Image (cartoon, rainbow, N blue to C red; front, side, top):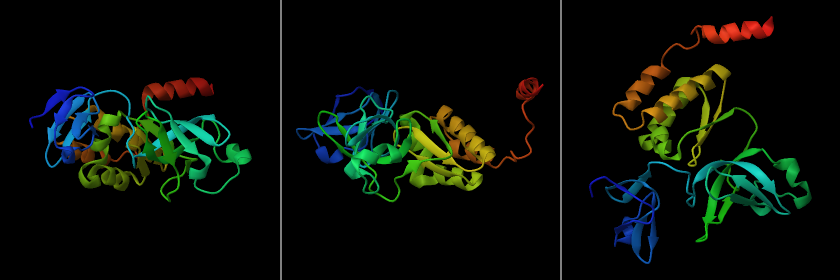
Length: 235
């Protein structure tokens, strides 16, 4: 199958076993989940060219609490659909009356998509040692369609980012990236992410990012414009 642009719901194949990322199966046939670019190797895949994140089971995502009910936290997961984290899926046993002591409105967490119903109700879980509350560092947003490029083939790009900056980095499939480390190192990671997002479609990206990350940024001069603003504030 040559690469071509497809729209959500467009028929792709009669062979349901060919369904890959960015597709869904209905009555044994494969359809596109996104407006994006379709390709086929072992599986048919559609890479989104635009739009919000569409949840899939087992995705690791970063969400922010926007509402709390008697036994549920509702999270913004950068999707048209809210995620629901039931109290029973929290990382430890707690009482409903104490929910806000553990997660309050505005708090962010790393969670997993447990279930997506046909009506697009998104159930989340934190019952895994990799899933946790976010209490430090910074969260940076990229386009969900660029997440595979940030991770790289077999995790090569994200491994390089971590190694060269000494930062811990969690990439959510929904386009949110959580970075912890020293402030200058976090800044360097975010600059690298900007490059990846901007040049994701180009060849030789890994080499260019590698060169950028190896630059000695510890001794870079402070931007003169920012320095002038800082001096004005201190006067």
